[in-house]
Structure formats: C-alpha cells, structure tokens
Image: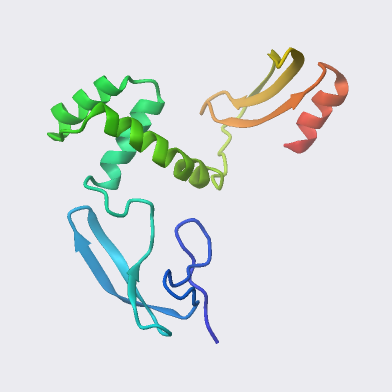
Length: 171
C-alpha cells in the first residue's frame, strides 16, 4: 500500500526520474536559499527535492517574491532594484526583475487559484462597458469592500438581466 505524497500545490508528487509514487523522506538539504525536504525513490533509489519553482536561483524565494510583488503592484523595475539594494544590500538588474515577473507570474497564478477569499462584509458589484474586436461587451465584477479582493467576474454580450443573473448564480 503506497500513500501518495502531495506537493505544495496539492498535486501528487512523483519521482522526477522514474515517475514512481513510492517515495520516502530522506533528510533535508541546506543551501543559501534555505532548508528543503529531500526525498528518495524506493524504485530507482535516486534522491531529489520537491520542485517549488525556485530551483537553481541565486536569490532566496522571499527576495524574488517581494521583487515580483512590488513590480506587479506598479513599482517600476528601477525602483524595485533600488529598494532591494538599499534595504537588503542585494544587487540585481532591472532585466532580472522583469524575467522573474515573467517566470513566476504563472506560478503565482497557480497558487492563488486555490485561495479562498475571506469576505469581510459588503461586496461591491459593478459592470463595465468594453469594446473587444469592435464588439460591445459588458464585464460584471464583484469586489469585497474591505479587503479589495476580486470575488468574481463575468463577461457578457449584453447589459441585461440574463447576464447579471448568470454572474450572481456563478458565485
């Protein structure tokens, strides 16, 4: 009987070499980016660490995450670079910050899809008129007033009761 291990993202973890489920913990690996759990495959006897997306990176996941977060929040890459240099004494190029953003945006999106919003009370609903490829569309959106978390959205062809109803029933 094999108990499947799950990765950080809830997926079943397999041996990256032979794709077997039969894996066991085998100590920890320490490097300058932190301590990571080490595993061994019982079939091919090879060791590996769980892939978290930050393999072979010179900087810590915290530094990369902070830089990407600041950049996505609208801070120019030059300001992010200056912030990292002044506060953490880390020298990184603007090009590297842009590359991190491109690389980790998919990983961030994958991780945030599983988040459940904690709605703190009132939700604001609104619709926005859009023109996409010369066609009129309406985007219905709901946002939690206190946390500013986007609770949901729906793109409809008309601003009518049917699309509004669809939007509210999906939530």
